[in-house]
Each structure stands twice: as C-alpha cells, then as structure tokens.
Length: 138
Image 1 (cartoon, one colour):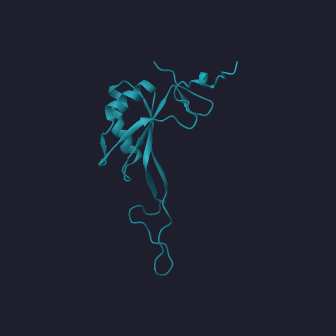
Image 2 (cartoon, rainbow, N blue to C red):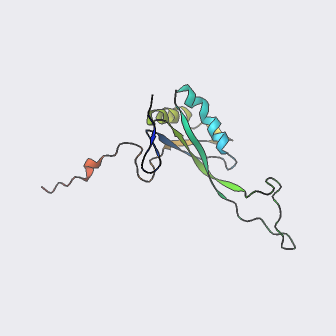
Image 3 (cartoon, rainbow, N blue to C red):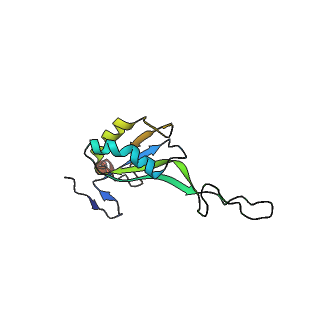
C-alpha cells in the first residue's frame, strides 16, 4: 500500500506525473483518462488525475451588425482549446515508468502520444542530488 499525502505545495507526496505531448486538439480530459485507465489498473496503480492543457478560445466573431455569432457546437459556453499536451498523475514513479514503457507511441484520437516523466518546476518528483552543490575549495 502506497501512502499518499499532500506536500507543502499541495502536490501528492509519492505520486508521479506523466507529461503527455502530441495530443490531438480534439482530445478531452475524459478521453485521456480512459486511454490510461486500463493500463493503470493492470499495473495495480491508481490514477489521481488526467488533464488536457487548455486555454480560452478567442472571443466569437462579430456578425455584419456587430453582434457576436453563436457557436453552434457549444451554445452559451466559453469554448476552450486544447494546447496539444496534458498530464496524467499516478500513485508512484514506478507505475509511471511502466506506463510510459507500455503506452509510449500509442494512438489517441489519431495522434501518436509522446510520454515522459514530468519533473515540474521544482524537480521534486524524484530524489534530487544536492551533493553536487558541495564546494571543493577546501
């Protein structure tokens, strides 16, 4: 049993995040979650989250009289566009490494996925070697 708790930055301690790139712009959080779910379960792991990075779409185009044209695909909603990458968080780095080996190059929505361990801004998802900072001026 892996013990998972929240660290100081709100990140799950003991968890690992997989950076997923080359996602189709049409890919959704749900599609990404489903793509990884069976493999995670087979490895005995736990998926904490699966997110496709998105940004707000530009404002709708104006019609001839200056009125915004409605989006027929999403009436009354602000549309969000995929940025072509996402993240999947699992319970351990061991599970993440096995998932990468198993799903590297797999196809989702017609795109071959490129996977790697996400080290994040702080590089704290694995043990860092602080010994390289020791001065040799003695």
